[in-house]
Length: 82
Image (cartoon, rainbow, N blue to C red; front, top):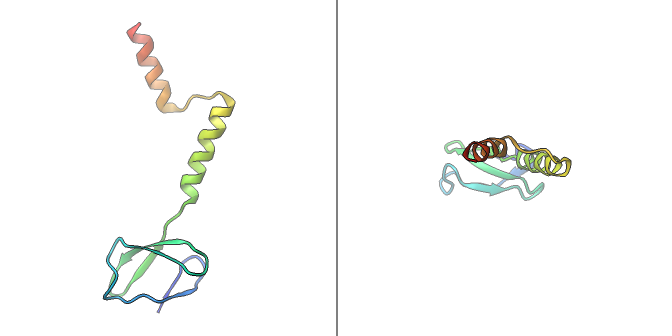
């Protein structure tokens, strides 16, 4: 028996039909789950929160006029070329 690591809902998975790295979706909470191991099947929650946090930080920086670190290096290189 396999359970969703997020909501503990039972997920019906046939060990012989899943592959490592396959992405499944929880029918209850709709979390994306990655098969990290077969025999026995082990699922890891794929966190979208990290991607959303990065996007939010970039949006806030743009609104505040802050330049992301990667862009600062490009600007310095452009100034050196002039």
